Length: 349
Ligand code: SF4
Ligand code: SF4
Image 1: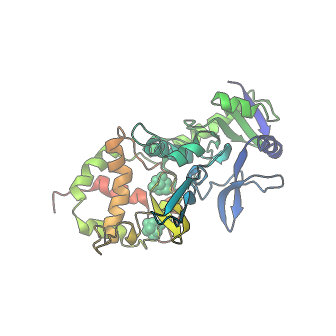
Image 2: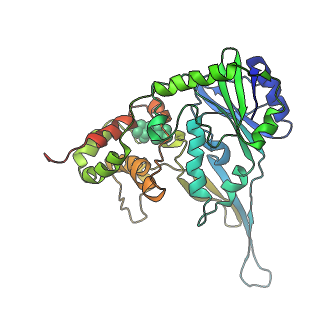
Image 3: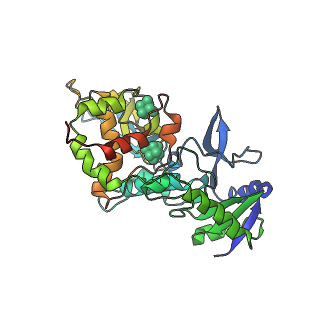
């Protein structure tokens, strides 16, 4: 498909046009973080920094109402009348300024919430008409390792339009027909030689990414170190169990369901949960199968690098975005843990 060059100063005009048809979620700064918010004219876009949060919150909000219910007495003395009303979302959206790792995170959601056995009506209602405009990364952060886990700074999988940064603008390329329609609303000039130059920057970034992890060895060694609690206590020693890693992760998808209300009316809510929290596996009896944070960290890392791949043809659930590394208040680094598993040797134990 044709590529065009869009000046940075013309991006706002493009988003204005897109926003006439769809809710556009775009990156902006709030309290020191870069987050996605609904775009409107005058919005201050953040076009360079990697978003702190990931696009998952647009198709899987932190909190959502699944249904409302009411219970009324029966005048004839029979059973009370209970009524439940499902509140399915309607969303026609554009995620502007996703990064390839964030889009790849949605790939995990698609497999978990929209497969032959499980189809989550709330997730699919938002996801089905959400289009994605992605920035290729020409300057990955030192914490990025997407190439270690099957991605890359120019990975277009799952995106409708790719934007390659170059000087005072972006080379824009439509990936899908939906992307072509969106790009037709942009003001731009033929990209010409700029396409090669912009893609070369991203390729240089890809080549500079860190040495790949040995994913097969990590999977093999995980079994060996699983019961070595000294090893897991060392890995989790600094962890505070705050859950920031799971909340910011583009592929973490665990949730909790709670009811709020009175005897006569209320609502059922779904909220993000996180496996680093003590209460995640606490049982009503008081027993907790993952009472120690070492067990919880082992589960989180195990899910990303072992359990998810086991059921998804080897695909690692970590997308290498580095968000958990950047935002962990204790500097826990999942790359170092993965490397420690990779190098684990139980011969001398
Ligand atoms: S962000 Fe860091 S401290 Fe918080 S739960 Fe995750 S690893 Fe532990
Ligand atoms: S585990 Fe960390 S590096 Fe991997 S996708 Fe999640 S936030 Fe990104």
